[in-house]
Length: 218
Ligand SMILES: NC(=O)c1ccc[n+]([C@@H]2O[C@H](COP(=O)([O-])OP(=O)(O)OC[C@H]3O[C@@H](n4cnc5c(N)ncnc54)[C@H](OP(=O)(O)O)[C@@H]3O)[C@@H](O)[C@H]2O)c1
Image (cartoon, rainbow, N blue to C red; front, side, top):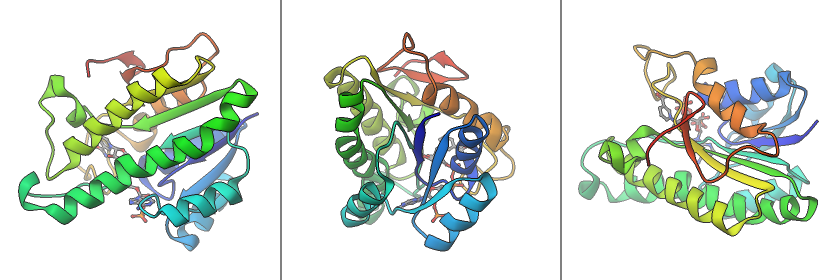
């Protein structure tokens, strides 16, 4: 049984990842920026609530302190901006905070324990819109932030021992507040590859980008 922290776990794909990991027998720290939302989701999945605003360095430091040792980190929290990237400076700042800086600081603070114990799994929930092979699309700064998260995945995997695996994934188009109700996949389907990466065996991949448990182009 491992100890997993999932960010943005109060709804959508994050909630499905938290539920999947809890159902698999792991202890899940249910991260959410709203304390009550975190408690409610933790009650739903049988996890431990953890207040965590990934755009706030002080909140990250407090949450890491409160969480204790973490074996699995799933950087799931995300926001979708709108409009043209160069016309939305606040959206750019927010997107980078939530989807790049937050994951970076969580990885920075949580990986020393993973390295020391010789086990760690990090899953960065990215998007096909963050792929250069797909044109770095999406509204506002979304694609730019996800491309940066992909780059962080490659760079962090290179700097860590193979026992601490860092992978990025795309959940596909999922029926959540972000994806909309017309999307083709359920949150559980969107969560599947993240759960697989979070529980990889020792000979599993690191530094890759996956959808439907298959490697995809950056
Ligand atoms: N849905 C799709 O089709 C799709 C496709 C590709 C990739 N993704 C990625 O999948 C991940 C989950 O998306 P989703 O579809 O489940 O979206 P969602 O339903 O909109 O959920 C987003 C989650 O992120 C949280 N969040 C946002 N800002 C945060 C912050 N500063 N600190 C902590 N949590 C924060 C939200 O919390 P609040 O409730 O407090 O707002 C919420 O729990 C995202 O990274 C998204 O980019 C989704």
